[in-house]
Length: 320
Image 1 (cartoon, rainbow, N blue to C red):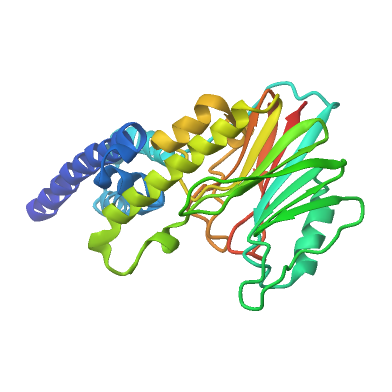
Image 2 (tube, rainbow, N blue to C red):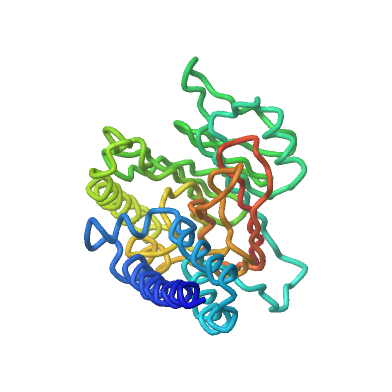
């Protein structure tokens, strides 16, 4: 009996240590982030990874019948876990029924299941504007996208923008020598920018060499910062309102994300519910796809469940 009690006490101590570690991870990932290689890695790693020890420790408390400790430590640990995951509470604000604009962003990953499934999803969701990334066919060249009835289409590189409104003033926006340019169009009375920021595999020489990860993530974060700065510079030359969306390959925390948030509203942060994870599509653990808006009010944002790509689409409803 004494041995079991000692084991239970040890578990309680470990839970306290785990709680302190989660707090340190939150502070490092949100407030320090890209200022050092280690905290960049902490910020960019999918946050559910950090909750695996938490789940194991709480299971140990249950098996050892330390229910009082479970209740006392469960509340702060649960709240901190939700902060780490970026859980959003429902938005109960009044949602005007008219003068709205719906925007879909979706990295289709070269449409591995064929264009028809992507087209069917767009028809089903009926967005006013759809911004697609990775619309080229890497192996054979050419494109996977096709015209859609009721939509105009602008394509540059591996980016495509579909709009129910006339598209004009199509512009390529260079972001960084190490990354793809963005495409910017004027349509429906708004400026729409579709972007695909640098990704981890493109920057890592060998992703299996975990010791190189902090340096690799720090390099990627620097590239992301340059890309975001260019997006902001481009927006400073444009009249509002503006929508910037796409695959940002970065988490909703840290300095780079803060730069975007200093100028644009994150639609999911303002009007989404839950975690908003979009990658990978089979079991999402990261929120890396965004619809940012300036001088537009986000009314609703939701992730569409589908596995036709390695990402899930994000649909945002905005008031113009």
